[in-house]
Length: 333
Ligand code: AHM
Ligand code: MG
Image (cartoon, rainbow, N blue to C red; front, side):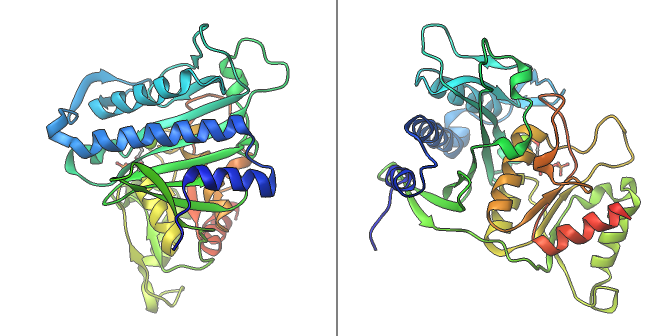
């Protein structure tokens, strides 16, 4: 079979659909190259002295792991010089990162979670990088946090890399979802799955069930019905998976269907769920919708939420369309 590289795919997409201008192509290639470097560090583990905590906290008050910081640095450094970006934002940085004056400023804005699934780093379980690309607003001067606060429907590209048994890159530019596998010997990304699609129905769900006592009524009802199995109202047995790396859970759903949930719960009304809207939920929602799935916060489409803060959290229900519709309908009742 003829191998199609990431570069070739991007060039051909631009020729056929006009959706990936040269600057965006450069951006995607630079991010993909950074993910290659992160994958290399992840793969070294203890041999590269990259495991463990960094003795610092991020803006969300979470202890940072060494790899969180290393990955953040890799992405910043890789993306500063190309002239394709106006600014960047990251889970690991309190405010936005401007492009240094010595480099030209471009028209795109990049957001990322440099290393998602941090709790899995030290135990050799799949982790990933998530990214979202927006366009700078018309007539923007020096970029501010406000310029980033655009709803997910404005994303021009989104993707993630998953560092698992294989390193893969899943990408959308608004024309379907494609998956590239890193050829470690050649150092290149090779297109291995075209037009990934999520089946509308599923018998598999993902939620951290240790929070069950805090769930709100609609989530309780939905999960109780799934757990009741073939003798319950759903008249079917459901299987459960929870990796605690959103990237890995979403990757499974893209490959064989399923529903992923990280709901808000009764613990602290000022913290609606765990996942962040702008660099976790939105890019994943874009990918999932492009693969024929759905993504809501329980009430509305995630990508239509107007962000108010860079690090805003949001409840997440995403994956197979029929199940997302059902749990969303329980919230609306
Ligand atoms: P992180 O960005 O700090 O790694 O946190 C996000 C991760 C998601 O990947 C995952 O779905 C979730 O946190 C797991 O949370 P929990 O430990 O509560 O199960
Ligand atoms: Mg994360």
